[in-house]
Image (cartoon, rainbow, N blue to C red):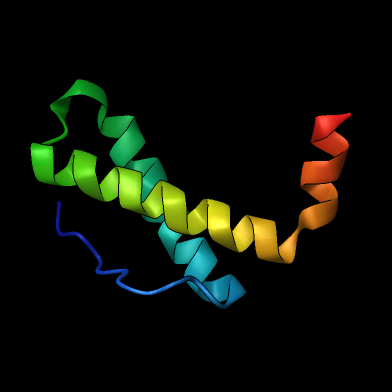
Length: 65
């Protein structure tokens, strides 16, 4: 799988959608992911969580209840 480079924080909904699609594709590979893909999966997860924290704080507050 060719990895789309996300080397900076996700700042737009379009970037978020692309990153989420890549993350989903990597998760769907399951145990067939390479070490590079696994590391990238962790990076994408961090970037996505950061975007969600900055753009949907009400979702996190509701989940904490």
